[in-house]
Image: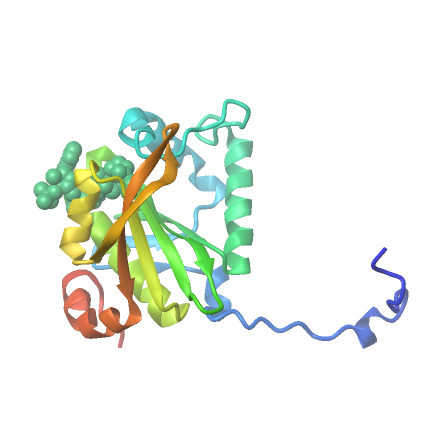
Length: 229
Ligand SMILES: CC(C)(COP(=O)(O)OP(=O)(O)OC[C@H]1O[C@@H](n2cnc3c(N)ncnc32)[C@H](O)[C@@H]1OP(=O)(O)O)[C@@H](O)C(=O)NCCC(=O)NCCS
């Protein structure tokens, strides 16, 4: 099909162009590790399964009411090591493709939640959507605000995006508190925006652009981050 005009056997090394990555985050995507004052964020790997599944299973309804409904036909990675391995591999591919960055959040080397940059769109938009959750036992310490500040620095300074957004169901008071702590700008209500727990839910959209990042970078760094030397 696609091989008709291609020079094949024996000539690959001389004919194939060297593919160089033009990914804006360069080599970081394979060894990604982001640091806040208290939290460390990095891609999950199969050996994280025991810790990840313990937290997910212990936090049942705390999480499920704010997440898309899980299909009965797809294995739950919390109960299935191989499904977790496949999840890790899929997230690795997405990260290497530059389409999303799914990061485990660790506090003193213990897994505590996830902070993600999804739906990265380049072209004229240069944007991405942030999602997050934390173990209820770790809630109330501003760890997610710190994680979002860390991810903001990565999105603007490494990925060179122009805008990130966070989308929140209006009754999710705890998540809105995270936005208040970071002073992200409310852009408006998107009706029936995302399927959450089986319902097309309205979402408040919070935006944050690179111009705002530059204006507020010093204060956000002082509060949440470790200044780069
Ligand atoms: C939303 C969420 C990520 C916030 O994370 P966090 O690190 O606890 O955020 P904060 O520490 O800033 O706490 C936010 C608010 O949660 C409330 N809270 C704190 N501890 C709590 C606990 N143990 N149980 C319930 N609510 C708690 C407080 O009202 C707090 O606001 P305050 O600091 O002004 O008092 C977390 O509540 C969570 O994972 N919820 C379930 C999943 C979810 O909603 N994800 C986001 C979808 S948009």
